[in-house]
Image (cartoon, rainbow, N blue to C red; front, side):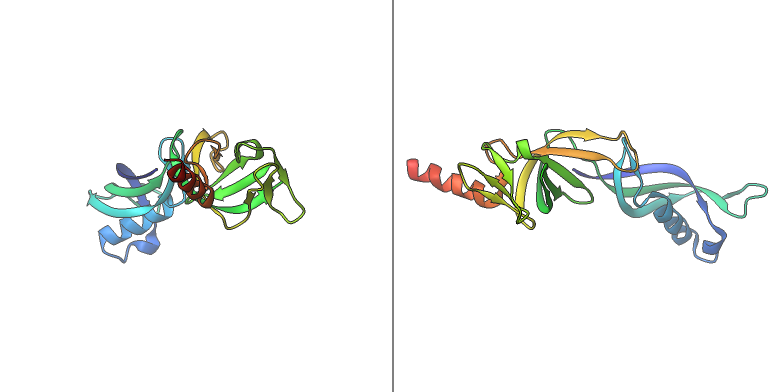
Amino acid sequence: MFYEITIEDYVRVDPKYLGLPKKEAVLQALKEEYTGKISKELGIVIGVIDVLEVGQGKIIPEDGGVWFPAKFKILTFKPEIQEVVLGIVNTVTDFGAFINIGPIDALVHISQIMDDVVSYSKEGVLMGKNTKRVLKVGDKVRARIIAVSYKDPTNPKVACTMRQPGLGKLEWIQEEKEKAKKKK
């Protein structure tokens, strides 16, 4: 889920930005510090949206920068368990598929692709034994997040399932809807 969060923090403005107007200098320093930052509390910071307030700067002896208290907004992506996400398959392996769900890739284990026995073929696709459904790179899918781990804070892990009604490759979902209409 994407969030807009307001934060108050002190930021060190490097001397290279001190020729800019104060708000712009603080914005540049915040972008350097926060963009791409990953934490369990914030998720993955996409970027700094706006600087709302900048207080009086303070100089610390033997530090060439200036420290400013600032109130600012960031855009962040924080994957939530049970969240339904849209993604694009970007890698297919013998153990599952990786789908891009925004600023991060999520793993859909081979056992969570579909309600069928799934095998990996030499052509680099995953195929259902009975349904003959195929999942390949570039396919658009709908999945549900079932696990999120920040054990390695620089590389969070997300796991998804596509084995529930309304989930899977978008073409499969459409096929199921059409079958349901015909039954009525």
